[in-house]
Image 1 (cartoon, rainbow, N blue to C red):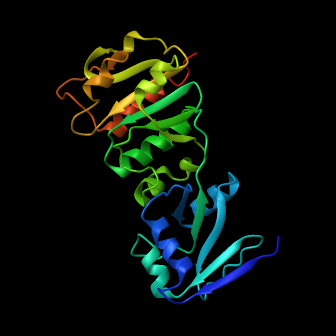
Image 2: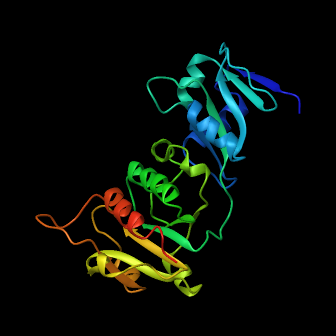
Image 3: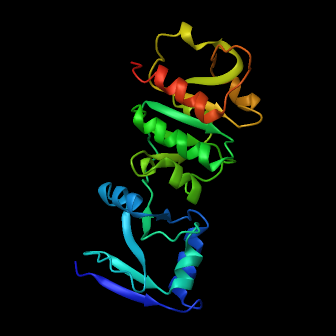
Length: 241
């Protein structure tokens, strides 16, 4: 496929207006932007890379992909950071609803940094996918993508209710302050969903009633940041069969 470069220098350009919408988060077509060389490399490695955006005078050369070259002002408008990235990737999400037998579920997570860290941790401990509630922050928020460190390109991520997985026969485990001590469990029975709740309110009550409640025994404090707590749980049950 022949490389094609398109130069855009006007805010009124129709393609540029579409790119700005992708900056705001993922759309119905599943396309989003990712900033930086490291995320470009991960997107390319996983087949999620569609095209790239470069500064007009950037020395970077890209073969076999469509390249949009923008003026400094337009490029800055697309970036979420003060220091401009060398490259912005136009990416396609992994469009896969069936996300395996070891699923992490996020119920009302609002902090994109937490969401991205949890995605990264789930990949590192070999969980099969991420599901999230309809009131979560978008996993395709620029801060979520950055915090995932490229893990977002490797795991299927899907928006769904926890009850959906209960109805499909998954074993549901929810993390709460009044659950059973997780150390009493040698493993979690597959297929399973391990659920974590909102930073301030935890898992909503109707979801708590869908499965077994688990907690981490702690001293001197009653709760942990959700990204920290999820990391402990995911490490504990990474070898579940």
